[in-house]
Image (tube, rainbow over all chains, first blue to last red; front, side, top):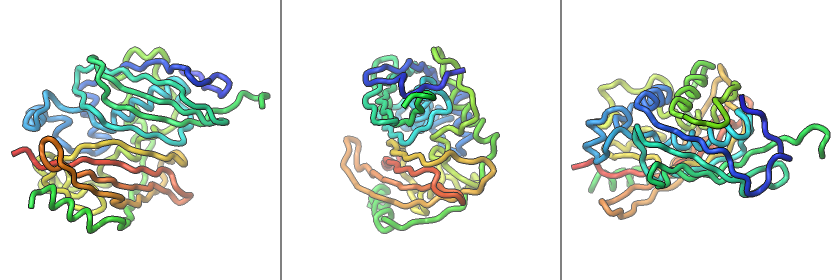
Length: 142
Length: 163
């Protein structure tokens, strides 16, 4: 269980604990199912090959989800995000080792900005992102 | 006219038109399954697995088709539905998600009916290395009876089918 983070725990430059993700075909199948996404590129390797890919592809939204999980694993699953942006830069396939990292880049009153990045085992960026969260102050502190 | 050029023309005509879609509600089970799917490949997290019942912030904007969806016979050869965006047909294009800009207002509430307002915010045609590339920006607002839940501005990239 992660402990909720407070504003007093955070300052610019703090690094978030890294999150390591190893996509599996089961994850991709489940994500397709729960989002009702029938795109064959996520479950049909033979089809993915016709588009020039070595295997089925991780969903672009799943990259975004993992960036957020890095934040939530650090700040607590109940953390309140006010905004989030991410870009899909490079595809990933099952068996890749994706490392999500982040850093606090701004603290403005109770809003904390984190720059995030997901890279593969070759150091290539699959998805950069930015999250803004609202953190509570510890009780009794102004 | 190529498929990409046709899609560009179709999307251009639909620019700014807002379509309102009744989404129904989601269950605690739907939200839980999404979290399990996302976390399934996460390993070696120093922080440990997540707990809590807060819906994942990307749940609403990740669902591709709401409702029962089209029958299998109506899907395109690549498996996609022919008109995933506000009734704008992009049939024949190879689509890829390019990214999102999200503003979170409130958490989705299970068993609470929602609506989605969707529009084509921008569309451009570029020349990529492998041919014409459609860049489509879709704006979506998810709301329930209380008010806005999530605003999502999302970019999709479309290319012609592989020859």
